Length: 157
Ligand SMILES: [Zn+2]
Image 1: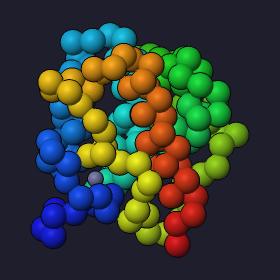
Image 2: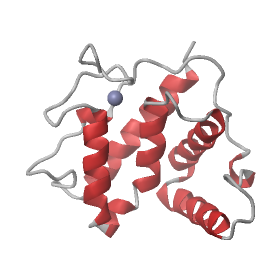
Image 3: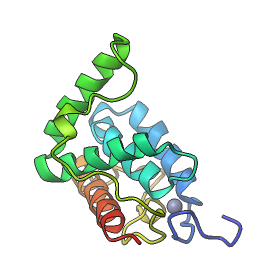
Image 4: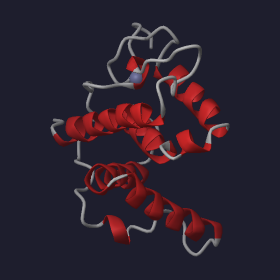
């Protein structure tokens, strides 16, 4: 943020940088189960847009989860994510169960993209809320960010 721009290349919005938006979303969704349905795509897209310090294996899983979301929809993603949480809770094996995700493209090697056509600090909010115009509208904005994230990673290098 030294030059006023984020890792994702975006300039700060009224709330600040993407980290400020991300933390505000995480706080709001904690009190809103309907909004929380988009938690996984929010986390995946945020970390893929701000990937310094994130492990490559974790990024690869998140890249595939976003593709699953874009390809099969939110309900399919929620089923896979719930399955993974259950596995982690049982400590059956560390990390993600990759089986449902093997059909999707792996994270491309090389440097992280520096530009995304939709970013977190571009999200609108009103009276401190991201779901001011309804959950469906919020969900479609998250889907746009998810699409922009996969698109930039696929065309990186
Ligand atoms: Zn950013």
